[in-house]
Amino acid sequence: MRKRLLSQKIEKALNAQMTREADAAQFYLSVGSWAEVQGFEGIATFLYGHVQEERGHMMKLLKFINQRGGHGKVEPLAKAPADPKTLKELFEWVLTHEMENSRQINAIVDMCLREKDYPTFNFLQWFVAEQLEEEALATKLLDKMSVIGEDKGNKGGLYEFDQDIAGMHDAEQSRGADPS
Ligand code: OFO
Image (cartoon, rainbow, N blue to C red):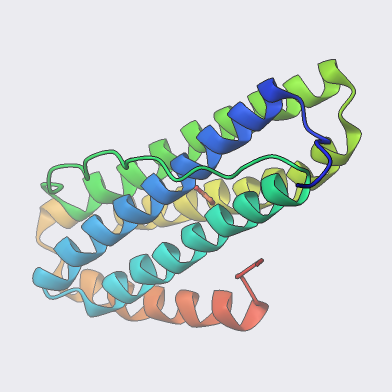
């Protein structure tokens, strides 16, 4: 049995965050599958890449909890959302999802500061930086969608967007997005 170096409260919050990361993986899997069925291979590749990333985040949390003498608990996952109606809606969901995840992470960071748990505070800085990037990327994609104007039937623009986004996934992979 490892020595407990986490308070019960922080362990509970980290466990809840671990489940949120697993839920995020399910979310990206669900919308990725929808995009693939619609014929957007590049967008699907990008979203499937995020499934792996979110699972990496989940594992990073699990390992940290266990290392600090807690117990990373696997909880049931939330139901995946209904299918989006449009690509724009899909990317709106991505941004909302990432913003909510940032809010939850920031709340745990705040809790760590109040409890003077500096090692966990330090560990979570990686997640703070990651969320900053995720929000910026989701905003950029949403902006592109608005410029293309999916609703105006701009098929050529959508084709190019689909090609570009697959490249973004490759670039993220070569940057070494997986943290675990
Ligand atoms: Fe876990 O990176 Fe965003 O949500």
